[in-house]
Length: 229
Image 1 (tube, rainbow, N blue to C red):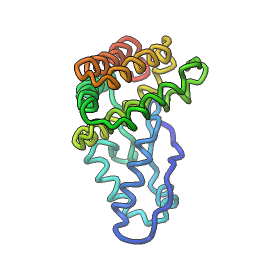
Image 2 (image 1 turned 30 degrees about the vertical axis):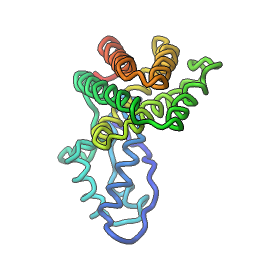
Image 3 (image 1 turned 135 degrees about the vertical axis):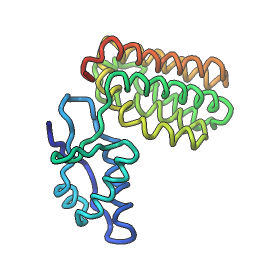
Image 4 (image 1 turned 180 degrees about the horizontal axis):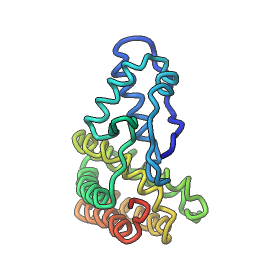
């Protein structure tokens, strides 16, 4: 078990402390690297109270909301922990993400503006003349941004909402696996093809490429996901 210094900002002393604490904690969990180590991440109530500048009551209320949404779990006499998924659960989440993002890519072909497509192209172009394996940490963030851009380009709020709950786990798994088995280099190739399909507004091709790209992650986790066991 390990304590992680959670990166949260103090909240203003107004309105609903519970909702402000909830939003601050959820945002911090969304940015956590959950699977970079095997130990559970415990959230310490007193520390969070001090960092957010509120009493423990709204912290407890926020934790209850986060537990209902599946972001944290309460263990009697031990505390509150950020939820980690098993390998099988992660494989199921990746499969669902593949379905959602591939549909987002299809919708993006019809709905995305030229400016949004340029943003996606620039994300890939930043590593066109660089070996991503020499900049794994930087590329990992660009990789996550690439997939979030596609979700946003779909213009579908429900897809965005559904992927939000999956994102902390997808982020954590992608951060661990991107440096393995030359996945970063293959990722650049896949992303380049996906952008080209969206630029051509080829919905069938874009949908297929995104789905295959994400399911490739599932195959890798199935074979090399010991860090989840």
